[in-house]
Length: 461
Image 1 (cartoon, rainbow, N blue to C red):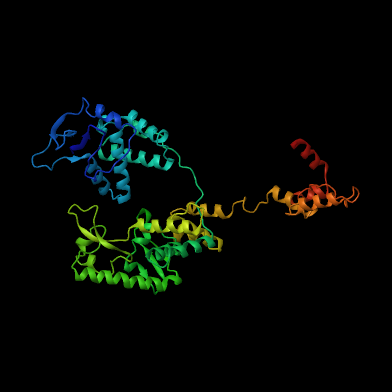
Image 2 (cartoon, rainbow, N blue to C red):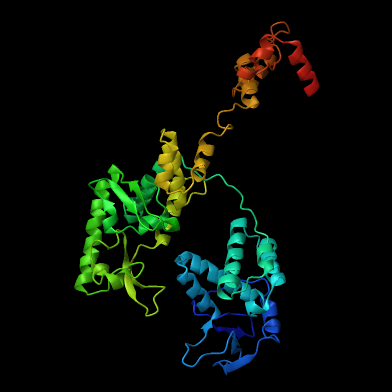
């Protein structure tokens, strides 16, 4: 396979113009691109001036093997990357992330072809991400995975240094969980619209954001009171409950979706997107009611993976729900960094609080391993939640000795008695004393001291 890498170099700053749409990627070495863009190993095969004098188009072709007569033209690097990702059935999100990091790596390296780079450049790029951009460990691992995929799967390079690159360990974080009162206030602020219904549905079922907005009509079973989640994370299917409180609102949403479906039929619009070439196998499935979206978008959109630029009725965009939820969090006065995924964390935690078996919660969440679900038990069974602080016991015993010690009129009453001279030295209240806090763990030491406990206390001091 011959790989053709095409880019556009600007004299005043660097910009890579690829088939992905010209996404801007910040780089730590953009200033060096003009001097390092042309290397001795890369041969210039074409140079076409643009309409302005400040830019030039440069096409660099790296041959792998002689081209056969009648063979298709060589692919550009990012196109070859997308082709390999789709061949291995990676998701669209993974494709976008890998293209982003490969483009950023090329721009950082001065627009040189990755085949001319080695372990030192890859390591320096990862060091730049960690030190200059200060990315998280998960982001660092994603960038490394993108570069490893590029060299192994696209360029066919399997050098020993690829296996020696250090992979940072992601830190374990406790998920953000809302209380019942906070969830109630949040959902009330989201209203009764389509985003409010989606928020209630995600909290009531534990679905992820994309799993909720990608629901189709055939996936909702009102008779069995279940929802079938298709093609979830990892391409897995599962079944979740259908909250009875959402039976009526979901039926109303079905009526709204059917009106949109009928309108598309009247206008002879193209059907919805079908995965895995089902549109070729079932010719009329894309226009059928069962495959229509439960939450359709208001306008038509272009399929990002279609070479012919097919236009479909897509589902509701996830940004709309995210914006409405962030506004509801601010309106409810919730100080926690709550996102749409926080509803899923709260769903699992509240089920465990109600006594639901952890295996049931694992199946509802779609976790492959129960250890992933165990993180929510750590939130519930934290020893810090049920442990009394010694400061609380100290304050309680002090307040018991002098009830007016923390009253608002304590200082004013003492000054008034001293002014009129009615408080004598013999009747004056004794000074405040601090007693040992009455903790259960301290009862044996307070009631019956033993030589062992005395020796232990002496050695500890």
